[in-house]
Image 1 (cartoon, helix red, strand yellow):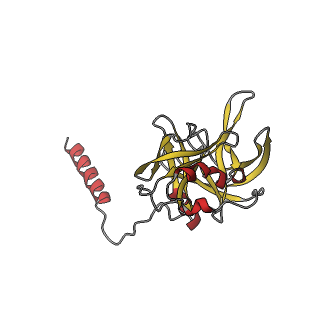
Image 2 (cartoon, rainbow, N blue to C red; image 1 turned 90 degrees about the horizontal axis):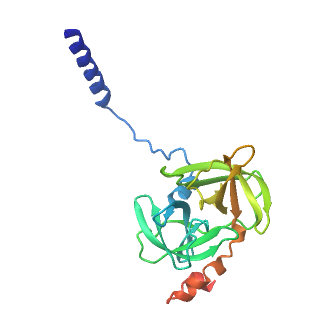
Image 3 (cartoon, rainbow, N blue to C red; image 1 turned 30 degrees about the horizontal axis):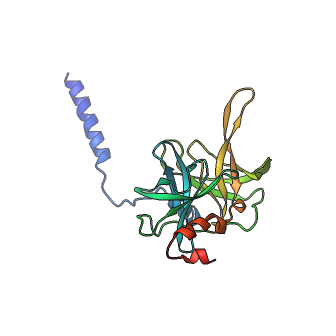
Length: 241
């Protein structure tokens, strides 16, 4: 019994000694391994939900409009529908203003005075479709997990009937990543993630390292915000471009 008490006492002392640290220590952020572009992309990433399922997206600043890019199947309601946009610990309501089911791209509007005001990256799409080998980064909310950041590269190009060319990205994706905004290493948008590849033969299997992306060239921003511009009383600068 005395030996058992001595052992327990010894364990408690060792545990206390480990927990009671002292001296000069520097707190290291878990984001120290990211470059400036990756940190900015991560800070602009959001979770989008209608109260049932969820997808991902990214806040962008288009002149004086604050918008959220995502996949159409993430926000597939009628124009004017409300969705909750979550960035960090802040949740805000956004309005669906554009929906393109063919190319799987949607656009949400964050009204002035919202709690996320000032957040997001300047809208900067690539002028041309990005080539094979282009490095990418994106941040998203897979399944029930917290925000995660990934790197990868464009591995190929596929043509889908009715949708045109689609970018194939070698990175990692999972359920809940749809709608993520894919950036190149210079901070320009190359497209919107809409799917993870699935092998159907001989058995159904998710190929989580083969990601489908709709090129950003499929989005005509002037057209996408046209109905919003009509609805807003004070014409924003973005509507005069």
